[in-house]
Amino acid sequence: MSYFSDIYNGIKTLLTGMTVTGNYFIHARKGTLTQQYPDNRDTLKMFDRFRGEVVMPHDDQNEHRCTGCQKCEIACPNGSIEIVWDRGIDETTGKKKKKIDKHIYHLGMCTMCGLCIEACPTDAIVWAQNYENSVYDRKYLTRVLNQPGSKVKAGIED
Amino acid sequence: MMNIPLNITKTIHDWLFSIMPEGVASITEMVIIAIVYLALFAVAGLYLVLLERKVAAWFQLRLGPNRVGPFGLFQTMADALKLVSKELTSTDRIDKFLYNLAPYFVIVTALVALSVFPFSKQFQAFDINIGVFFLISISSIGVIGILLGGWSSNNKYALIGAMRSGLQTISYELSVGLSILTMVLLTGSLQLSEIIEVQRTGGWLILQGHIPAVIAFMIFMIAGTAETNRAPFDLVEAESELGAGFHTEYSGMKFAYFFLAEFINMFIIASIAVVLFFGGWLSPFGITEGITWFPEVIWFMIKVLMIIILMMWFRWTFPRLRVDQLLTLEWKYLLPINLVNIVVMAIIIWLNWTI
Image (tube, each protein chain N blue to C red):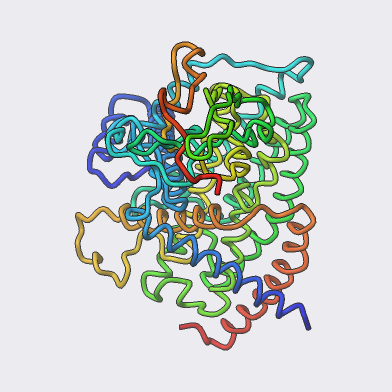
């Protein structure tokens, strides 16, 4: 007699579903997720998973972690990243070594897929959580990620 | 015929009959009542739309409309204004006459059904002795409008939506009718005001009829939701499959008629439920029984609002049914249960086991 157990299970599962949404309904005041954006512009903080743009963090000695390995440039499916690199003399070993001159990032071409960040072996580039990315001219969308005069942090490659 | 509880109606009634011959006066009176009802329920429909949007927002932990006016109270007014000002477009090679006729079928049947409800003891436009029968028959006409709209649009999606609507309404009409009949067995009258009078002494019908009444109520709510073409039975519109179903090709005010009719139909289903199961305008436990100035409309409206929120709860909880699931639910489950339920109810009344 699966007929009656079907009816019983049907009613039971429907009531389970209604309890879940009913709970939401009762706690709607407290749990509202809506951000009323232009009004709360000063206090709005984006959550950690939000992908605003790719940035390269620098510490206070103006040092970044990018070794210029170009893995991000290869990983990028639509060519948003260009690395202009050079060879310089490493001070400790005295050998010639690759270093970046400019890490160029085209925000206008980026699809926020995150493959470059996954590919980076030294965690030199990360996601930023800024969300107001509109500009009046597209030349502002081409950004140089490493700050002028910065250099790679010692011991990153080890 | 017309007795709105405020004392002015009596004055207007007497005044009209004093200045005009009798025939003209009664026609004028009917026109006035029609205008009052139209105005009342157009506004009520708009606020039901707003309530739906607010309730939907709360179920989904959002805020809902809150920009136009305080707490967004004028949002639907603004929407209606926008719809009135829009162009009435149509597709190539439509059946012009039927295309223009369809929305009126839907909205007129919805508004006509409202006339028989006793909103309070004296607030009832049309108290006929076959009220329940009238309601069942008038609510079946609305589907003609939907079928015509889908057929005349010259659009495949609209046609599929309309055909689904026909299938759905014809199937679920049976369950609505039979569950109402179960309750009519208990009251012994088809007149809506009489049904409420029965409940004044014996308690609300859902208590009087206990188990079969509760089953009838559940079946009525399921079938009633299907009858109004609301989710989870919104195969007719099915945004993800058919665009907007039968009203894909309608724009502006004609679309607004379809939209408004859906909400007025919801109000009607809720009103039938309130009259047949929850005592209409009677107060719970008779707490305002002795107070003569108390407007009983308030009790009716509170109960209707509860049922409407229950229907919205259904809408924002359950996923849409497939066509075969829809028909299985009706013909294999609701209908047999309903038929057995009627027999059980008859036996209970025969053995005098009602409370």
